[in-house]
Image (tube, rainbow, N blue to C red; front, side, top):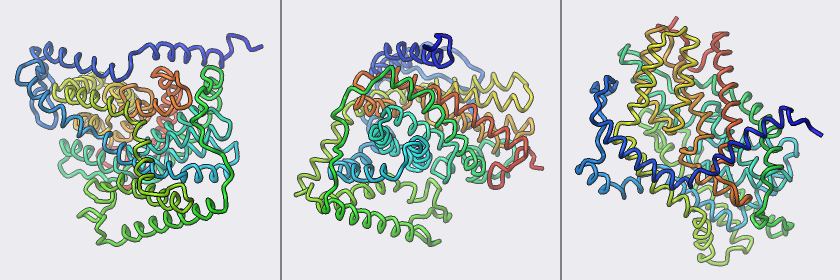
Length: 514
């Protein structure tokens, strides 16, 4: 019998307490409703207070806008529809899900995963899911729609806990925003804000889009290792004992494939490969229509970046259609539209949540409360006057705290870069190093904050297997990954710094460059 003072018992005890407490939190949609009300009331109170903080971009003093004033209330109610329609994850999720619905309704996804599982040995399932998660971050927000149910299904089919699969995929995907094999749309976005911040002190300073690439590539090994350990040694053992699977009907059919199914699968895969080759061939030329005016593919202005979600729709719909009709699972266009309608039913709770979350984000930004929180935290760090190693650690922890309430990396960095980048340049640290420090906590904390926009969607995937899973279940499941990712990514950064290994292209550690 295990002692009640064993490390495993203690780990389970405090995680169980977090889960119990978290599950007592109201439904996340209700939570955002009350958060919106609190933001409006707080803005009314703070609007009469004078703050000394100056916004680094506008150079104007931070003034909280009173959202309870008649003008602001009319503006708020008049913009509700636009807030909802323009909520970033909403369109991404719906468009990507339509393609997935076709591929799922036709049986193509089930066939692909079943055949994939036959090639993955049991011991490699966990690292394979994490590896796929790291790769999937290039798909931006649509990766959550694709990766979570796939990871759960892979674990379920191999006899492992499906929620552990969601945890591993989620952790790999979050880690992928810092530890990555390929550049993604977030790289040019962050680099642009970093360069703008640096030019407040040095007008001629330039930041390479891939200024953190070498660090990101090397960190993938550490991310896979720590997430693998946490999944197999902490998360899955706890889930197995505390949250058994109780929704059996979610498992897809394991029926043997007929000759017709195998032939349909080969034809569908051939079509998918043909599509991939075609688009790669279209991307390569220097004058490609998919490139931005400056010739890059990864720039936010590049059509290739703006077409990521429609391309995912295409890459799922085409093989799904071919497989469905070739295998006789689809007999008419009505079957195709039904498959899209059926999968969209799973998004109802997410769509409702999106409405309330969009209103909260509007109020939080419009009131300037978000800017005040970021600026006050950064100023507090600045006044501590710590050694450069501790200062950088402070940046990591500051971002970690801010990430609990502002989950958008671009929004946070738009505010923090003009403050932190020149501040650290003044003490001799490069903008590229500051950006790398920011990305660490931005990656690690997203997985364990209930304010993360995709939490309700992930929770809906969890409830397909465990109907009583709640917010506390997801938070307690992901907290070990937050601590693990924070530790290993920080150690990797200090290792690079200690041995003076370049963080990326045209990237150093000191300012001015030596």
